[in-house]
Image 1 (spheres, rainbow, N blue to C red):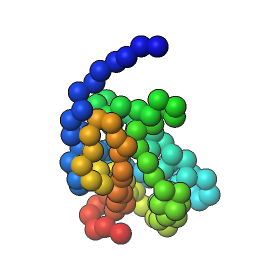
Image 2 (cartoon, rainbow, N blue to C red):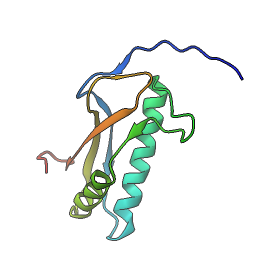
Image 3 (cartoon, helix red, strand yellow):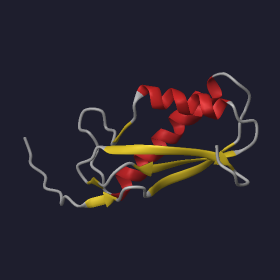
Length: 113
């Protein structure tokens, strides 16, 4: 066994933007689900790079409810034009995590949904 020490400090403050990406719909079906999964992997990588320690078993830093995931997939599936998907911290989060997330999907040219 080995012991590693990490400083525990606030990494993200409540409401702080973690990452935002432009998504252009490519048909229906699994495309929206794959886009959300890819976005969540990017959120995980960005949060890890900023200092949130990953769960030692799963290697992830964030948590998202299944219902929230499917809500995002359904909402993304309703768009036909490019949108911006943004992830924000839901509460102050220290290095130990977990990172709780809030999401926003809005038109790339202004006006939210």
